[in-house]
Image 1 (cartoon, rainbow, N blue to C red):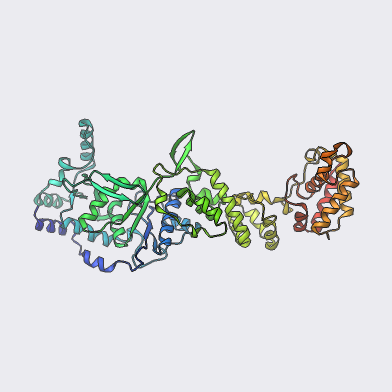
Image 2: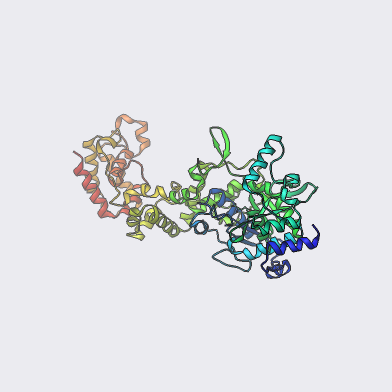
Length: 556
Ligand code: GLU
């Protein structure tokens, strides 16, 4: 076709008046940002609940933008209306909020380069597709699904590359007159890319994978679909390319599953005369399954679904620390050297993301990091921990939320018990159990017949509790508490120091630890618990007395 014919075809296919590319360039001018600033984006499709891979890609993109003084955008890629689920967009926004990954521009935040929802950017895509037709880089295809299926069968039988290309691409060779005839008959069509003939191989340097070479794309992929209302929405390849350009994205960092689309995307940039952004393709997060590596899968692995983390109450700071650790093994050393710094101070390096085989997801490591991060947070800002537990509980354990928030000052003391040394919380879900005995509704008295230490019998347990009742007043200091406890042990024939008992066990019934265990059982219902003096102080003397009294009554 001649250039004039292509122009005519463009008007025929897209009769609406559209903006010119020059007008769009003006509407979305290059950003004024520092020289090294990265503009990145996360561009999810609202097709279901976000996956761990989404959290991973979003956080990395956010960090790369923030670190360089750039911008991080959220773009909703909802051009495939068939795959969209109701509420999908809101889920994405809520997930980023929950993760505390703020976007600089997005559907809610707005911004100079919006709209940030693809289905609201139709006029831009129409302008671009019209221009592609004008330039002879796109053409209408009238092949029916049946015809395409026949083509695929023939290709299979002949053992040739499948797809719509070369001589298989029947509509690529239609004349304008033939196209007009089909249009006049009202035949349904899509618009395909007209892949350049004999293009050279694509050589690029991926930010993560390094130098790569791809054979040039030869397939005439669909760029636009139409329905009864005409051209509705473009497919991902066109929409994403156009948006990355007009939203002035400088670095596209995305999952490696998109690597195979790169040759097509590159050709679209070239057809439009645009400078492509830089690309980095992240290896997919893997999991070890019976000794074999496979992709983390939403179907097989509960932890692949972002909801898992909310339900368990694994705080975002722990997930972020883990993402940094998965991305860059130098994170552990940095954390050791900078235990108190916020994660945003960690210099994430794109070149460290270069594990070609995919980072291995390891729940044990995530839990260990979570313990460390919660411990840090507890030291730095216990009120924040209180609020985080409460908001988790309000959603997932409302009964506990009511108990926990009845006396906020009390609960704030509870969660801080031995905070310097304890690292036993890896998820908020564990909190109700860890601290249960601080709340009367959750306290479970011990089973005196079974829980006593071996060197204490029931009669002795009762004696210990009675002696405690007599000797302790509730006004003890840490030092006098300890002294009294040792005295109490000695009075009843137990060694005041465990070391003495170890030396000459025959001289004693047992040692002070056995005696303390009886008191601990009474106060907490457990053999293991933090320092008794501190537990008693937080519980308050009336509650301590009551539990000891009830215990005495219960031991028969
Ligand atoms: N919409 C694509 C997705 O759902 C985005 C791919 C890209 O980042 O280019 O992941």
